[in-house]
Length: 127
Image (cartoon, rainbow, N blue to C red; front, top):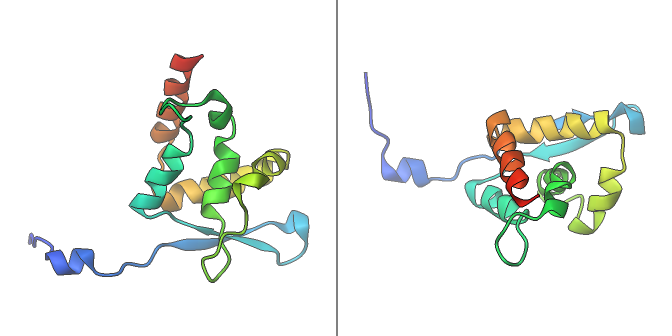
């Protein structure tokens, strides 16, 4: 049976998914809360990869994982754990730890591997 959603139901408040990612490398029981993005947050994240002229920035694309960590990691109250000032430091952390967080952020925010490949392919055009 098919039922078209009602506008009010669709526009009602929905819960953004979140998941604790274990980071035992920093101690027993330590987690990083990773939140999915709303459509607007995802758009702002994608725009953060552009330079001031609106073109993809090679430097920012090189920071895509660290920028995704900044955009997705929040305290339980929803406040950001990291800022863009942390991008370089995050990029210097162990790849396996960052990938664990990034993979969760991608899944919760609806980033497919094809989405990430499209970003990388578009970056080839600016090289």
